Amino acid sequence: MKENFRVGLIVPSSNVTMETEIPAMIQSRPDHYAESFTFHSSRMRMQSVTQEELARMDEQSVDCATLLSDARCDVLAYACLIGIMAQGPGYHEESESALHQRTVENDAEAPVVTSAGALVRALDRLEARKVALIAPYMEELTQTVIEYFEDTGVEVIDYETLECPDNLEVAQLDQRNLLNIAEGLDTENADALVLSSCVQMPSLASIQAAEDKFGLPVFSAATATTYEILDRLNLSTQVPGAGRLLSGGLNEQ
Image (cartoon, rainbow, N blue to C red; front, side, top):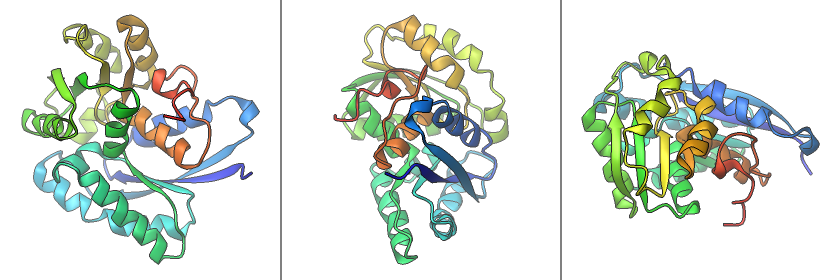
C-alpha cells in the first residue's frame, strides 16, 4: 500500500489559510497510519471577492490542474468554495470533471475535489437537511451560497454574513469570535452548523469546541475538503479534534 502522497492545492492567489489548515489536519493524524504527505500549490489570481473576479479566477483553474499534474500529484483540491458556487448551482460537478479530464490528458490521472462539492457532500454524509452557517462574504454572495445549498435540497435556516470583500482581510478574521457569532444563530433546529463556509476564513481551532458547545455536527469548507482528500486516497478519514465529520466513522456512508 502506498504510504507517501502528494496533495495538489488549487488556490486563489490571496488565500493564505488553505495551505495551513488542511496540512495541519492531515499531518495531525495518528502515527500508526505510517503515512507522509507533501503539499503543492498552484494559484489563480484573485484579490477581491466579487462575482467578476471569481469568474476570471475560475477560468485559470484548468491551467492550475495541468501544472499540478506535471508534479504527478495523487489528488487535487480546488480550494475556493465561493469561486465554484458563484458559477451557478451544481457547478462543482462540472468543475471536478473538467479538472480531472485535464489530468487524464496530461497522462497523470488524479481524482479532483472542490471545497464546494466537498461541503455539499458532507451535508449529505451527515444527513443534514437543515443547517446554520457563517460566511465572510458580502450579502449578495452569501445568498449565492444559500441558493446553491437549496438547489441540493438543504435548507439554510439561519446564517450570519460578515461582509468582508477583501480576501486577505478574511484570513485575518479572529476565529475565536465564531463561537460568539454562532450563539446568535438558530442552531436548536439545525442538523449541522457550518462554522466557516469559506476556506480562507480560519476556523480549525474552533471546530471541536463549537461541536462540544452546541451538541450537533460542526464542520467547515476546510474540514470537508480534508475529508474528501483522504477519502479519494482511500485512507481513513480520522483527524483528531476536528469534529464528527473527521471522526473516522463516515467512510462507508
